[in-house]
Picture 1: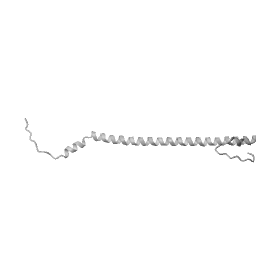
Picture 2 (picture 1 turned 180 degrees about the horizontal axis):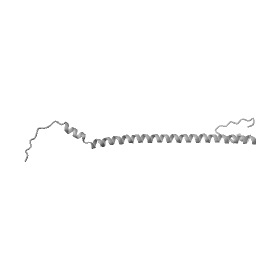
Picture 3 (picture 1 turned 90 degrees about the vertical axis):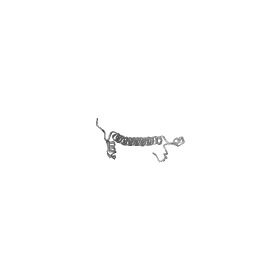
Picture 4 (picture 1 turned 135 degrees about the vertical axis):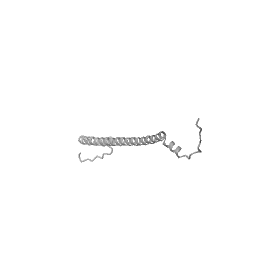
Amino acid sequence: MSTKVYEVTNYVFPAKSVNGMTLNDKRELLKYLRVAIKEEATIRRILRADAKAAKAAARAEKAAAREVKRAEKIARMEARLAALKNPVGTAAKKAARKPGPVEIRKAA
């Protein structure tokens, strides 16, 4: 640009700031603005991609946690089912009982 210094704040320029500029100054300002807008768009795109990746990682982490909880629940239920199917507990209880009085049965 020429000797004039233009402050750029959020790329908003009131109309009166452009009216006093020469054509070459306006062209230079437009070049600068184009570059600044491209940079801002690139930064926003990168931030959006990072946010998307973080969201996907959080979803994957939650899915993994759900899968672990599900596997633990299945293991608990299978252990409970195995305990129900296994008659050893009942047989051990019967074997541990004290013997009752002897019954004598007559054979016919």
